[in-house]
Structures are given as structure tokens and as C-alpha cells.
Length: 419
Image (tube, rainbow, N blue to C red):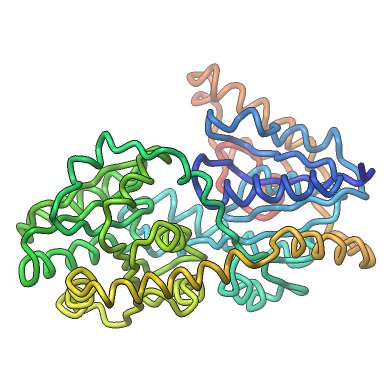
């Protein structure tokens, strides 16, 4: 085994999400190549916790010869610890949704996305290589001044859909009605309201025997969900089902009964459900925005006009014309073949060799009292978690902010700032 360790750092490891699949795939490649490789996180889904290590243990095993693969999707404490360590860094950018999508829906996320996008620019001089997980994300890194950049392509792992489907819920919709489906979090940049409007036009003018299945978590977005329910009531459209988060086995069952995957998202860094639909043989109709066209790679049906009758007519053609549907699915199969033919492991190891073969980049300085701030932050966290009354009794941020805090942003009371 190589004496050099290549660890991954990220804010949270989620179950069943695209970043989680990629992180685990990277670890498999690195360990197979002989590298010691751990996954350091702030939080993890309970089902994945045994695969992770607490980010606060990063410092103990730190060594200048090691490499950190830093998955950046929003600013975090794990990010700032990684910034301060002597390792070389490969930044993998998964995109941050523009904050304006969350105005009046999730004020905290507005702040976090704004600060995360600002913080991203500070890694230009810190990382030795910046990778987007799509060409769209790489171009955003390049526009921010990152150099060198590259693309670590997402090669989706469909193993989560390969088990026996659990149709306990899906069987209620397995009939001769047309099932339009969207899979993904119910959040504003996905433009679920547009999906509902398109479905309303399709159901009213083309096919009354149809339903819309919205499969994905809406946790933390109760206000947005209420807005969607109000829209459904205002339009008077029936047969719209917000199904929430489902297991992998349930997801496979919903894909199996779907007739069309309908996407109206305006901001995607990649959009894994599109290629999941390819894999499951579901024809895709998607808005041509952000990374969506490159992800679909000439397959499926892209539209640029969001007039509801226009999109509804596209959906109707796919549902009613079996020959057309078959041609679209065949095109999706070819695109998926091209995607799966990419040698993800070889590309990853090539990037590792590229970093190891270059002169070490001089790292930007961090605040002189950074590690004192780390210790203070942990003390404050202990109070916040186990003695909340004592934590709330502390003086507010401006009164207690020690020297250097603006540069380290580790105080739980403080919003994210630069490393």
C-alpha cells in the first residue's frame, strides 16, 4: 500500500444522493489502487455513519505528503479545517444553487448559498487542482479564476436500483393511467410549480386519465410545499401526489410504473435522476438549462419554451406514440452506454498523478489563532448541544467574538466567512 493517504472531506454524506454515490466510488478506486483513504464528514446518514470519520480527526493524521479531495457544495467547518491543513488539495465542485431561488422560501439557505459561493473563490490559491463533476461546473470554476481545472465525470452507480423493487406504494398507481414522474428534492430551483402547470395542461387538454408523482424529500421546505399545494388548489388540478423521500427499492418501483420523466429544473450541476431514468427505460422530457443538455448528451427530449401547452404536447406525443417512445428510449440507451464507457477510475488516478507530479503550491496563510478558534468552537458546540440554556445566555456574537474569528468562522453563532 502507498505511504501517501488520499482522504475525502465533505460536509455531509447522504444516503442515496449523487454526491454520496460519487464519494463511495472514489474511495473504492483509491483503496483498490493501494491508497489509504477515509471519508471525513461533519454529519452522515445513520445508514452510512460506519463508513465515515469525524472531520475533527483530520488534524491528527495530517501529513504534507497526503492529498485531500475536498467536495465543495456549500461552506462548512470541515472545509475550513481542510483549508488550514498542509496537505495538497483537489477540489471537486458539485455546484451551489444561486441563492435567489430560496428568497422568501428558506432564508437561512439564502445566506448559506451566498456565503458558500463567496467562500468558493477563496480556494483558488489553496487547491492544486479544481474539478467539476460536469463540464458546466468546470466552466464555472474557470470563470472564477481556478487553474488548472478538469472534469471528473459522474459515472452513476445504479446498484441502488438493482434490488427487488418494493411496490407497496407504487402498486396503487400501476394501472392504465399515464404516470408522469419527477424525482428529486422538492426545492425552488427544480421549478416544481412549472411541472405542476405542465401536468395541469396535459391532464386537462390531452389525457384526463393521468397523474403526477413527485418523488423526493421536501424536508426543510415546508413553506415551498405549502406554495405548491396552494397552486394545485388554485388550478383545481387533481391526481398530484407529493410522495416524499422513498427508499431505493421504492424508487425502483416508481420508475418501473412511470411513462414519462418530466423535469423543469432551471439549475442543475448534473442531475442524476435524468440518467437514472435512462437506466430504467423512462423517456425524459427536460428543460434545457444549466448542465441538463450535457448530461442528456443528445438523448431524451429537451425544450426551451415553458409554455404549458407546448410541453404538454411533447408529453402527449411520448405517451401516445409507441414508436416515438421506443426511438427516444433507444437514444437514451446509447447515451448511457457512452457515459458508462468512461473509465472513471483511470481518470481519477490520472488526476492524482497529475497533482503528485507538480511542484507543491504555496498555501495561503490562515489566521494566527485558527486552532485556538477550533478549540473554542468545540467548547461552544458542547454548550449548544448539552446546555442550551447556558449557550443562549452567552453574550451575542459581536460581544464575544475573539481576535481572528472573522478569518476562521468557527463560532456556531457566526455565519460562514472566509478561511
